[in-house]
Image (cartoon, rainbow, N blue to C red; front, side):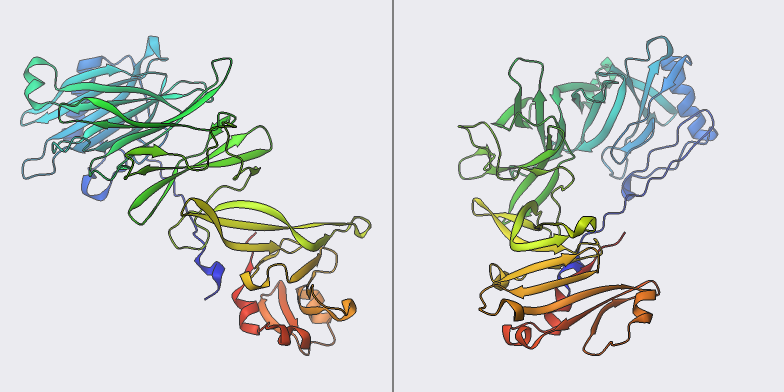
Length: 456
């Protein structure tokens, strides 16, 4: 199988449901999905109960991220034979739109009733999710709030449900308010309960700081700090957290931007033997992560489809060049190296180069490293692979890959000894193996296995 055929393709589908006068019910996991309010019947009663509690002079707020993208989120807390359904409605008072709020209504036999209301931290609702964090059966409500300033940190509030508190107007209790730059509910320690992982960049002080924390909850609904670790404080912001799992250990990958042109990756996991949070690439002496420092634009990803995240880096390939159109000038050919974290270090898994016309990638087999040189020409569309340790530099070619437009291919007189890699009505890519290449161990199957078209 072509090594690149396993590339993950992530397709994000955004669906927006619009209702006059009311946001639609948020899309939810299949077992939690409840039909959208249509301002009739029971849904009209929900809106009436909500407006009866908070008034009509309001502005609805829609979560900016996550699975629930509606001002109205309906959720069944226990999913049992007698489910208890709640509506979480996000809004702001019209004369105070800079403070987003959450009103919680419960569905009783005779209709909906507002049982809780709370002000968030910020003008926007960032995300809402649900997780059983204390093993009590009822899921806790995890709500993230955001200030209007996109560069500022956010806050996560966690609420627990107390059925016995309904009569006292104390059905929900806020048990956590924590600042974060990025946050993820996850069972990182492997204890069977969801925890809150946060990473916080703080640039408000003279000396910026960056800290990752893991917070857990006990049976008394009290949050405790399970562990923390310092991060590289030179990062200015983070991308969304990525996760994988190897040998029962979940790892978090944090891509951070450093300055205008660089980025880095932090790897964080829970060391079960030592019972602590670990950032293995962080150097405490320099207070930095340098091993994953690279140009912007290359985020970590599962590049080969094995469900393990790879971290990219870039190196100049030995004696290899790219010829550009401007006066046929040469530049060092960059090899992309994708590495997995294994046994305390980053281990290269996939290495590839791109041709000068950015039409395809070719992964370099491990056994060829430091034995071949590559020259790719953006003018002619030819990429030449040559042997390094040979005395005859004029007869060192192992194989060549040729890129042709449809017109160039039709006009080509001699097509003998050319094997096809890919063909369409617009372009054709072929290759030719030399006798020296065959002796070196180059085969048609190997060339095809390591070739991948770049989709434009």
